[in-house]
Image (cartoon, rainbow, N blue to C red):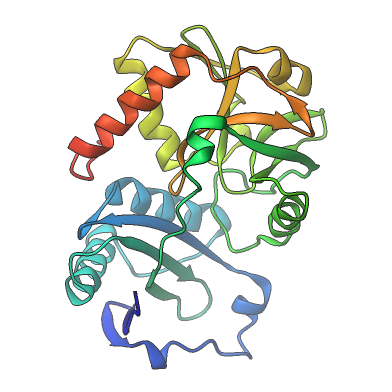
Length: 273
């Protein structure tokens, strides 16, 4: 799609007016937070949860602003109405400074190759710990470099390894191992609490899965029944390999969870909580 409008502080403007002030130190240093929201047929999925995380991210890194949940939701609704009932992504940007700015822009979605859902995807690992795990900030250089390395290696993404040698998450996704009907997640205090991760855990619980939180070493992942990642763009994708070490094919329990989650997305009307 060719998007002709964006939102700045709640005002719909022509996309030609979307400019970045080069003198702004907030832009230069990445003093901002953001969210990516999937819009399906004009419905913003899990908007309440995305806005809550945006606010929490801003609080964590000290962005003081005048925008509240209702204002952001209305701004999103106004832009969607201007765009029409299509399927695309919205990026919400909250930039800090003396006069914080709220931008909302529309982007064409990047859908993963369908083969990943059947065969699984390949990953590499990179050593990196994000300084504010619960804040989705614009300080993405290390994640960008890790993701770039993954793409150069022909892989879907990079899994981040902390100072203890444990897997925490991907550069743009959450990570799980699975054993039987139990999902194993790295400790929540060490990861970004993904909105799609939250949705998957809701569906998993409703379908008899248990959740364990503990450190996940490389060997734990390789020796599990399987592993998968979650994100707004990917939903659930099985992990086929990590650093060229093959994992078992997706077990029946993971396939069942993927089917149940697809059913949930088809019927939830964009509401999680």
